[in-house]
Image 1 (cartoon, one colour):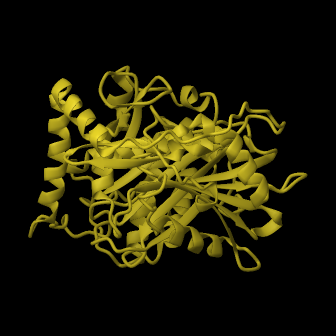
Image 2: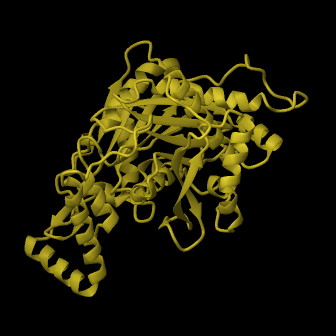
Image 3: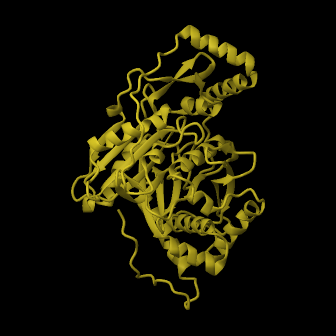
Length: 463
């Protein structure tokens, strides 16, 4: 019996209607010769699900001990792979509205902790896939994201060895209790950590325990509903800014987000002064011993970054972000972006999941926003022969944080997925536009002799 880690047990205990502990990713697929339909999707998943056996398992509690993973004797894939469609003409606004509703819907904790939605009716014959998994499921080590095993590096079909699956009988209560007692005797430290998780959960339910962080545009008492917005930008713009002003593409992305938050606040008539800053939790891959391990040979560690939102000069904002991240780069533990991008398979969704786990495990550090940024491959990937043209992370909200941002670079584009509390951030689409404007502001600072597009240039087509 595989037991849940203390962190996974915490995620299960913290799951609530206002804070569903689940991460998602949205992929847009081109039609290709044979558009992906529901029956074909079921077939492809049935071929690959053997590679992620935990997607057929459920956690079962055992008193005060850590829950264990057991096979779901009633597993029905049709309860997990669902079908939806956009109203005509299938524009981005309708897709964003649907994604916002789906990522807010809690998973059924009595079933394997994942769902996949096939969304039809997009413009130009495209379809979308929304992958959703509980944070207790995808740890990047024992289990990777389902998207990673479905996507291929070529459009050619590949036969995957498949065996008929028969669930293992659920252990009896006596066996589970006996196993827990043995585990406690052999690993008392783990039992103590499980107890600490339970006590922490109780403490959060006591009067006054749910005190909010200092009021700001990024802080709220989370409701049950979410909004979602996306942004696609040209990776060459980020590279051009980097080449002109120094730093890294990651620095430019974070500076654009910083400028975007500033512009967004101004549209809301929020007070912004020279001292306005927000603490961002930015998970990063490292090769050092600390952090959460992944099956890709690296670990992910949380980095606390102060975003200089009050700085009016876009280049100074960039330099401040770059300087704040300089120590991380110079420690020798940072993992190069091109190394992550060249990992076999499409690992970005798994890394976003691990990044969100890291951020959740370090909530006591007082950050006000979570930003995950994962470099992806620059060559297209496919599912059942259909090319993936866009991919947007959907990072979960927790605590009193009203906004979370996930970023993925892929096929010469940079894709931003922005999740906001529905009531506190009704203008999440404005935030997306302000991030794009902040990037254009940085591009316009480049020496006019450099080749770059003016403000009126053709922008990447949106979903």
